[in-house]
Amino acid sequence: MPLTQILSRIFVVFFIVAFLVFIDPVLAVIITTTLGGSYLAIYFLFQSRLAKLGDERFAANVIRSKVVTEVFGAIKELKVLNRERAFFDVFSANAYKIENNMATSNLISNLPSYIMECLTFGGILIIVLYFLLVKQSLGNTLPVIALYAFSGYRLMPALQGIFSAVTLLRFNVAVVNSLQESLSGVADVPNEWKTSEVIALPFERKIQLSSVFFAYPSAEFPVIQNLSLTIEKNQSIGLMGPTGAGKSTLVDLILGLLSPEKGSFTVDGTPVTPGNKLMWQRNIGFVPQSVFLSDDSLAANIALGVTREDIDYRAVEIAAKIANLHDFVITELPEGYETVIGERGIRLSGGQRQRIGIARALYHDPPVLVMDEATSALDGITEEAVIQAIRNLAGRKTIITIAHRLTTLKDCDVIFVIDKGRIVESGTYEELRGGSAIFKAMAKSDVQGLKDAL
Image 1 (tube, rainbow, N blue to C red):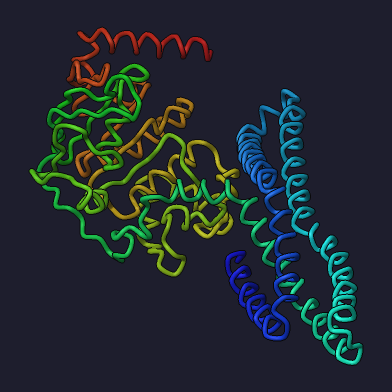
Image 2: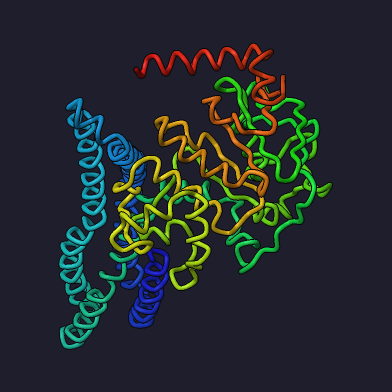
């Protein structure tokens, strides 16, 4: 918008000046030089100040947004601890800086208009004197004075508009630079988004990772190191290991959210690449540790991302039944699947939210279900209900489960123990319980945690 304003005002200024040059070249040059030079002088005087104000405003806005996000994420703790004031003070200080800098920028932007009014009035007097002394003809002076007064009346707003737009651009340089940096190299819309329906990558035999390496940017060591893993179709596997062992990174590789730096990731012998990643993901249902719920109906949350008119309510109900959620919906929710569950599912218990997550993962009936610490925040009784929902799928889907609680992995066909980015042991629950040092250490931790809770 400022650039458009600059171009349109330059167009106006050009024709007014051209007309004045046609009438009296010397006087036109004097007027243009005086007015234009004044605006340029004021701009160069304040440009560094405008840039600094813009940088400060941008930085303060980042902090203000961060504070808001943190406050609403920890509202209960802050209320209980009576710590709202610290966040309020940080928010207020930065909000004040933003508004103060914007007000100062607006003042600088409008300042020339007041100065130029004085110059213009003085300029008209100079023109009168010029014609009286040089032309010495009062009869011809009045029409020309009227002409220049009218031209000045049109010229001043045009020059002021150009100045205001230029100062606005200078003030927002920090924002523009940030946007340019964020958007550099980003395509408009990924090609896969333009496809209404994606065909799933064939999966009939096995998922295989061979000698896979992965390291995060600036990390000193790879998170995944020379890891090989084979998952047969309809097999239920568990991934366990200490914190930081690389379990979640491994799952992200399987989900196609990350790509191996070395090694191969294949499905039925077909490499999973950026080109067919979406086809592979069409096979996956994912249940995270913290399930996102929107302030919408239960059905809309299960069919996340599907427009209301396209929701398949039969698929919603089937998924809810498998997730042991259907009876709760029918008996306890006043409007059934159309009940609005509140922002972040505030009206639901933790177990109910997790079961919605399972139902969501099953809505498209994927052959692969990935559970990333999906029961870690649940109590024992609620966890058992969720595990029962998973048991309903055993032998019918490929299930990949990450868990800290070893009881969650009891029903897995194979459990892989991961440490420092490598698979160090594997076996059934009973086999590992008898001979795995890491398994015993984690089992001891589970028992201690249970004692502490009691």
